[in-house]
Length: 322
Image 1 (cartoon, rainbow, N blue to C red):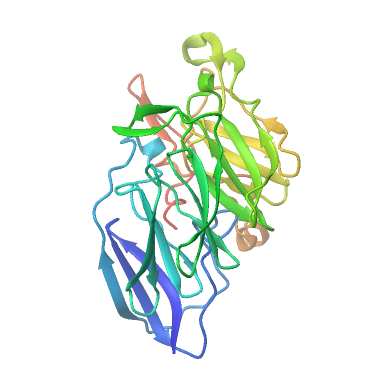
Image 2: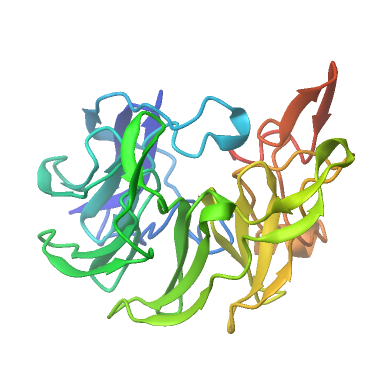
């Protein structure tokens, strides 16, 4: 029997599976970077000798943006649930499952807009959002639709990133924790943006925050104006603070109470602030114990910009790719 151990996306287009012989299947990789803190770490131990079992070359994607601070969909980001490797696509608006042992396509599910973020998986279910403004839950075994949740006020459409999308695309990538899925919809604050917590089994709303997109404050060049949360990036959970972290496009991430959805912290991009971006993670347990790290981690190649001929950045090099 094949012991599935590791997946690798090569040059953003080729999914490669490395395996070694064993007695049972390894642990799942149920969401982007494996866990709710997006640490990209696992308790699984790799064998010294791995061999290529199969590879699939997929069509190139067209990211929504070229800005490094918004490159959340530059390549394929697979997850693994049981014997299914599942990956979304903004090219043909689909989510596809492959057999981890053979690489054969098992099923494909289409939405009405680009799928720009990795799904989450739990209890045989695959959950994902789309630029069409809906959150979907399908069977991991055959791709059958189990429930669909329209997370937005209406079916209004707009041309966005050269595609027809909802006025409120789901670009707050989902994170799954204790039977709950957290995600965000909407990217234009003046149209309204929404942060959700829903039941993973039913899709029923547990809480929704629709009050964080219309805030008055200081913007660059000391201008005062209305603005607010513009969710674009993978949501994550800070277990120590019991907070949901929502990356907000080029601003710093917002922080919400995990249980109630109350906004705890968010700042508009005032003068002198270092650049935000789509990526953040929390320290792993090892980093907390050995290095005494706390709070959020950023990558200085993501959180980087040149302003008035001067480079500005936040974080450490290589955090995103570790």
